[in-house]
Image 1: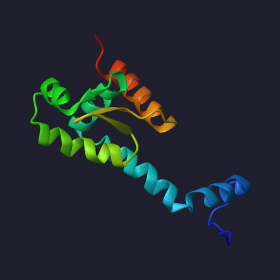
Image 2: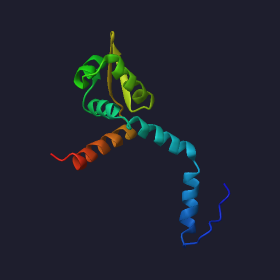
Image 3: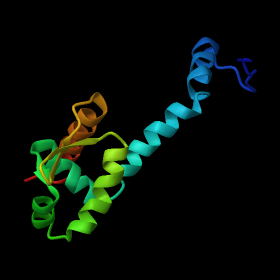
Image 4: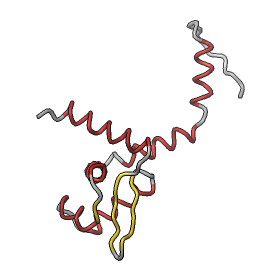
Length: 121
């Protein structure tokens, strides 16, 4: 990659060139944006939060959130596609839970910490 010459020099050219390499990889940032986009919806955050603490089927999620099953399924799909939740089938029932991945765990921790700060008891 060609290093850009910046208009102003602040004595941090080595660090700047390193950062230039990182910010040039747009696909990494696209992946991160897609994950954060999933949590840009209140219902998805509620579902994800619930599934971080227990495994549930669509019918129970629907009852807990007072929503229809199709509406819950609509929100589960992008969460599953982004890798934040996983599912398993047992007979006719499908059970969902948070994925055991660093991304899912980090987002869960972020939600918990933000709730402590923004929603004190």
